[in-house]
Amino acid sequence: MNAEARARFSRRKEARPQELTTAALSLFVERGFAATKLDDVAARAGVSKGTLYLYFDSKEALFTAVIREGIVPALEQGEALFQCHGDDPERLLREILLGWWELIGATDLGGIPKLMMAEAQNFPEVAKFYFDEVMGRGRELVRRALRLGIERGTFRSVNDELIVNVLMAPLIHLATWRYSFACCEPKRMDPRAYLDAYLDLVFHGLLVAGAKEPR
Amino acid sequence: MNAEARARFSRRKEARPQELTTAALSLFVERGFAATKLDDVAARAGVSKGTLYLYFDSKEALFTAVIREGIVPALEQGEALFQCHGDDPERLLREILLGWWELIGATDLGGIPKLMMAEAQNFPEVAKFYFDEVMGRGRELVRRALRLGIERGTFRSVNDELIVNVLMAPLIHLATWRYSFACCEPKRMDPRAYLDAYLDLVFHGLLVAGAKEPR
DNA sequence: TATTGATAACTAACCAGTCAGTTATCAAAT
DNA sequence: ATTTGATAACTGACTGGTTAGTTATCAATA
View 1 (tube, chains in turn brown, orange, cyan, red):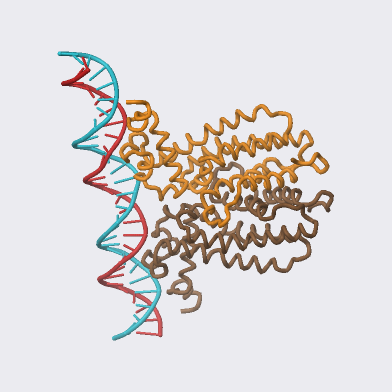
View 2: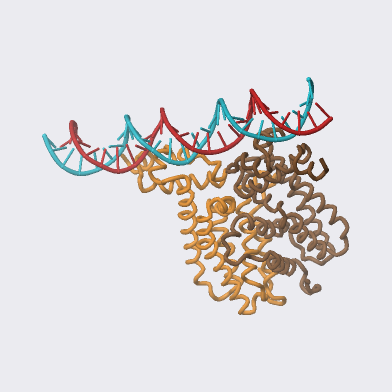
């Protein structure tokens, strides 16, 4: 049996966990944790429910894995990307915000904020992990860019701790939109146009008056 | 039997529906629709599950009532409030955004956005109602204030249709926060400080350069 | 043949929805 | 003022369908 046939038909102990978490993520995001049946998760991953239990101890363990394994790699990728641009705070912040959208918001991971918001109170430990290890690290990136811009005199002197939340909210909102009200819109919103309007407003709000015109 | 004792012990056909929807709202927001047991809803309202079924046909009917009866009155109250301030667009927009917070975000109704986001795909008809009748009307208020400001030359010429979403996102985010990650924060966020930072950023972003300094 | 990945049938618990029975209330009759 | 009968509000035990989690069995590989 050749490699491709193997990959398609044979038993794949290594690949199963990710196949299952991917299937679980899409269903958890679509329906919520409690309303998602493990039979459906298994079916979407192309296996039976028994197989799911070979890799995860419980439904809750699957949920934990979905969050942990789903978002941490993307976060590390993001952090690596933004360690270089030290010179231009405006450009750096723009790259971070757009980078979040490209790397998380616009991908399948974009459903995770919706899922975590909905389930935070049901899974306090996962919420704590997500708050510290995911949101905390993401916020720190944005905060450093803000601070840098303020120190350099490019940005106005705002409360960076609070403004981080304000800056992230429209991005998270856009990501969540796809999994909530998108189907209600007669004329679909264009994410690119939304992002342009958002960045335009934000940088007009941040840059000191008289500084160079935002792009 | 005096009025107070009556209010506490007697049967109250008229008051029951609202007692039940209030209890249901808090539990739906806290745990999600599917994870909420009707026994718990009934218990929180001080009645038995059988009584709940005297007033609502099904769990889904209860959900629909929670959304419809919960938010429409507050919306109408809001619309009535803002029909007068026609003169000063900046002040008008500020009143609308802060008014949303006071009237909805900071009250028990503040959980409804979280609940609707989580359940929109499970209840497309309720989502359609909410999208058209609640969000649509709220957005229209904000949009008119934006347009007015642009026409008067107070605000920059932004895409009002898109900016409405950007403006509302941080408010909805703050309201949702209370029912998701608030318990993860070691030092609680101060909503007032958040709102100040938000309004400061937004009005610096909206007002034309050289116009009077935002308050 | 032994091991391992996978399954499908199974079990036990849970919970939405029901209904036969109970209790509060009130008006009419005494 | 008290009793009584009718009714509407309410209850909680019960049922049936559903689903998380288990296990006996099978098939492929080494």
